[in-house]
Length: 66
Image 1: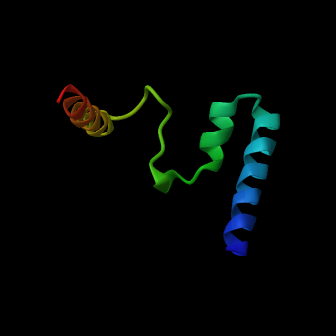
Image 2: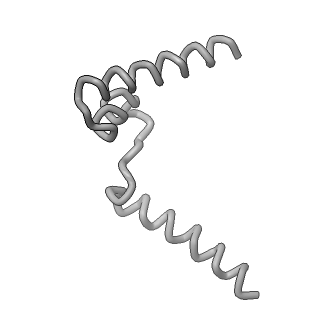
């Protein structure tokens, strides 16, 4: 648990340092975040991500209409 906390603190610190250099939160976040995580900014998701999200929304709205 302690190692995880240290990793998170380091990641946050790196994002803040990147922001101070770039003056852009989005750019700072995505230059620090590992690419293997597959994160994309909101509104820029690929088609499979959009489809997965819309499927979840459809399931949620179906349960509300009953």
